[in-house]
Image 1 (tube, rainbow, N blue to C red):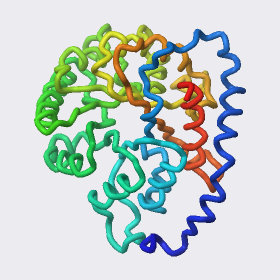
Image 2 (image 1 turned 90 degrees about the vertical axis):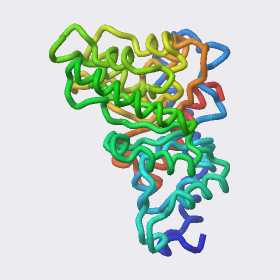
Image 3 (image 1 turned 60 degrees about the vertical axis):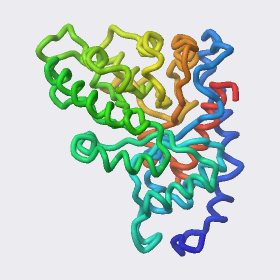
Image 4 (image 1 turned 90 degrees about the horizontal axis):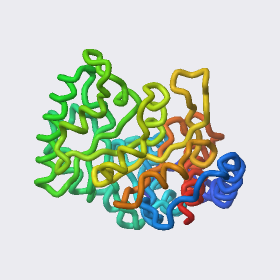
Length: 325
């Protein structure tokens, strides 16, 4: 670890974060979920594996930038995360005196027993640099490569059909290299087409993408926000109807916020009231879906230290509680 930034005391950091966060998570989950005690129990055979809990590194992006992958990835492994989903491959250049390489990141993953779940890249990168992105995915051992961008910035049926054609082409190219291409939703995809107000854009994308080549990562929080803003669908029904298209879930939690346009505010997993017990039951158990913790606002809402890493550890406790792990 001699290449790390000299001002960072890793032992002091671990002492500050270890031993305090999981207990807080259990207490938080028990207290905030008590109102949902009447929820039916999750099925005995869960479709979200207990031994493949991942984290979207966007949740701890401040720590990745300032401390580097060489500190953050071992710390996530210590917490008990099994996999990570990338949101970029860079860190502060002062850590190594240059930028880290994908090969070096892969070595850190391997040294800490971590697997790479997937990676979010810009939709422009898929359009103009897909083979480069696939090269990096192969180095990191990614089984999935995706984007968190909406399929199109134009909310018409024709634009979403054209976007589906693009995704089909990108998905075929990814499949040729053994990688699954995926799209991650926010709330807007569940809105209605401006030219056909009775048609939901998400449905257009699903109907016009080839299930052999294009997959979905359901962000459960944003799906419930979509349900609030654009009523008339159940998030679990999409997964139940086409389970093999959803290899990945983003597990993030929220509390009601009626005064906001989204209807919810994002919180640590286990500190919210989204109906995850019902969601897990309703999606069924016909296929496996890797659960990935994400909290967009963790870098701004937590006491620091431990900051976003503390939120990650407490949220892992909440996810384990949900899964009975």
